Image 1 (cartoon, rainbow, N blue to C red):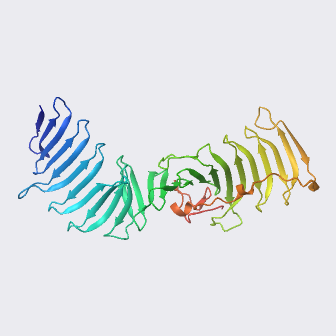
Image 2 (cartoon, rainbow, N blue to C red; image 1 turned 30 degrees about the horizontal axis):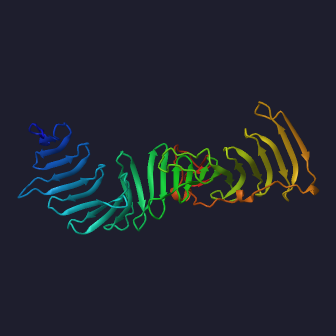
Image 3 (cartoon, rainbow, N blue to C red; image 1 turned 135 degrees about the horizontal axis):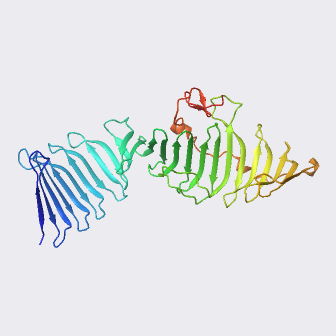
Length: 389
């Protein structure tokens, strides 16, 4: 036999009474019915496992039958599959339904209850992935509070697909910005706008392609990864993986250009082995010519270095012998005759600029944590450009 409990509330409270019914021979709640002091009511029904099956809430009945305020149906996993929201006059305010794609479509209606004024799609986590504002066509942004309480700002393209999602990490920390492909779902770039800017670029299959990190002195490090390295784009503490990198390029600001220039010149390139250690280092001069090569051991200590002439031939070789200290116990050098024509084995593809959108054009200058006039640690906060003065 189904049992029930009835709770009565004193005058002045929002609720008049609350009735709970239970499944037979169980204390698992089957339904909750609430009568409100203003004449409204609420009914929620559950499965034996405690997950809801439906919710119905009604406005106070002024004349005749009560008007439905909201109706929500849930699937076996407790996810919303249908929803309807109405105004007190009975006109449709919003309606939603789960789609076979896994998204939840929600349409918002004008006061006439027929004209659609907004369209939103949500993913399984409750995040907006599609937005069209038909009432205000120029509105392409939404502020959203996620189910976990996190506030995000979302930008959309004219066709409604999601362009970016910004999560504030705190006033003194900065922002995490996710950029999406044309489908509005696939993450292509993750940019952290903190005291400096760092960016993670993803391949179409979701694996990590490269990481760009801008230094406080105005330089830039580009780490290129081989196939198969995966990261979580939504991780607010995302850091460059220590394994899977194949090459690391160090670029410095072109000091011969305008102080506001975004141009960089190559300073050095490191070839990384399968253990994640630097195996070979190539060094460039101010003319962007390769002038030195270093070969490192498994402890990343230089065991051999070569000075190069302008024609690329080896001019001198240095051999280092290491002990237990952080400096070589002996260094032996030997000149190399130009006629020998000795050249290092160089893969020039390692030196080529890695194609990717400059993240600084996407998110603006880094977060200014302190108020410093002019140039501070390689960045001019007034102009928004790197600086060197």
